[in-house]
Image 1 (cartoon, rainbow, N blue to C red):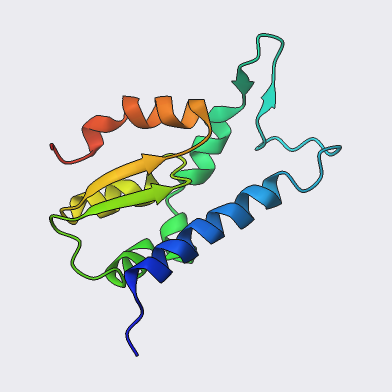
Image 2: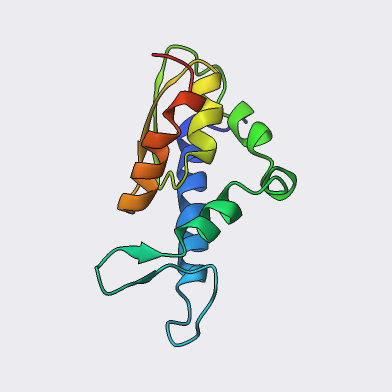
Length: 123
């Protein structure tokens, strides 16, 4: 039985949702890795989130290359990365030759991805 790429992409998105829920599980408890709004309305602690999302050991426990290989040949295809965060999977999929639409609800994550755009293959 061949796993369809849509199921794998859905699983990745579902994992991201669970990870986000874990970070927000106890709003009364202060966690140094969770962003909190400051008085200007902008979030603080985004740098600590970036360190977590871009951690070198993430490749060990999440195995992104194995997950992306399950998508099959993505060269020349358009892939949407829902809940892209810092673009951890988006970059890897783009390097495989796909056009990636990275979507996230966090404005700081979107700005950070735009600043890091040079890490992506040229269009």
